[in-house]
Length: 118
Image (cartoon, rainbow, N blue to C red; front, top):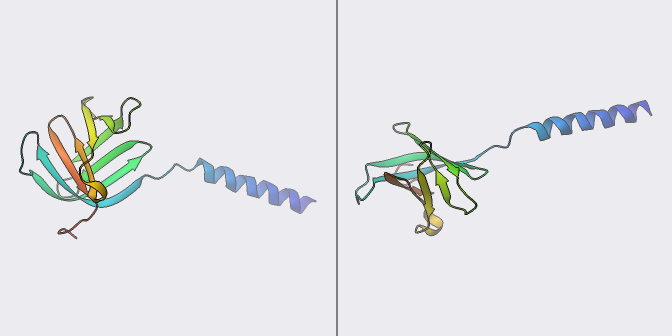
């Protein structure tokens, strides 16, 4: 009986520790092209880290370390605000190849295929 009680207590200890661990973000290496607003020529093109967790989006350009943090806004998917409180939007247009994020002063095209920067 004592062994059974010990095993049950151990099981619940591990279970409580496991459930207390924070959820990890989904992070992938991608290719990012950054376009200044109204421009058709990228000011940056290179590898980036794309993370998404509980609706929050993070994009970090590897070459220069610049980071974009987007927080969900409202109840409609794809609406965000950046760290300055300015509106940002996820836009379709790349299909399964990636995602487009429209910010106040620039657009970020995120491609899942990292070529030619592999």
